Image (cartoon, rainbow, N blue to C red):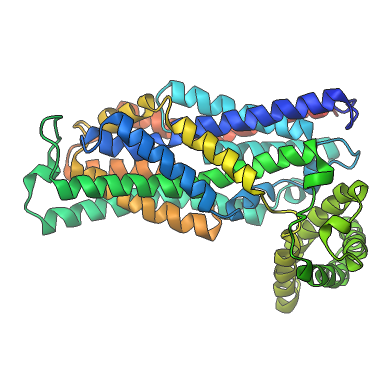
Length: 461
């Protein structure tokens, strides 16, 4: 459907501009959808007024995006096959971008409207998998080759284990608090005129800020990667390659490409043979360059395309059990050297993502906050429950952000609150818990179908 668009035409620019607006809208929805998990505890324990809590959370989300890395951003991007990221016909990846942003955004808004704390991370990953599988159907590619399943399973394991760890960790910490303190007010719902003790309020405020910061450092990265895909489509000459790559790194990158070619070519024929040729193209482009800006603007998109094909092939080599351990280790090393030329984000992209995530925190948070504070358990949230859930959440989300694994803030904090409710003997409301779990279970298949179906229609057969 979009294959008729000339990459340089006004229609292509308009479509990419729409993609740009959609990814910003998704990041805003991520802010008011997921960040409600951070402010629910301080609001329902009356540790901070709602406006103050939301302002604090928005500011810490902003800081988290700016100070976080880009490992999570491109962990997700590498789930897509190179032919989708950089279509061989020269067209910008319009179908992929529109399908991904529309599918994830529709699911985010739908679950928020129902007041259900579903995961923006799951929505994005489902969209990416749906697009990759739809591309496999379009090109008659085996599903095993359409997705880097080792990478996908690593991501999905993190998303599966994180709510279990949140539930168990928060429940254990809550039990420990009951054993070490005799302050009964910690374990009773508060009222506006009777807030918790000052030290408890400070702890809850600190954990609210911690969860918000780590949420920004993890979830903010996802939008950074998506914004980069869009601006590369809009202005490939300027953003296809990282022109800020230090000049002294270029010989090392060119050498890595030269070493990758025979390593890849030693595998099967077909895509490996093409990837080996792409490795030689990278070496040729960078070998005589004093800086990345020396690569002709007209060639940068093709070099970026070659890099993605090579790192995908190196991933396959690194995951093949029939290759010697030394080959697999070398493939991973070369992959990490080459990816820096295409996996980066300028400061203005970080700032834009931070503004959208922080701004989204300021609006629309009430629906999810009400669910977490009132509807999950049979009693309102207590200070001890809030502190336990937030402390565990900040620790898990923060460690995931630095390891490059995209975990779900929603799943961790919601599960943590549920764990403390069970440990406190307050009980859970089966109806709302069932709705939340159903939304969690359906997120992946729903977004796979939404984004995959949209991609199938938009990309044409």
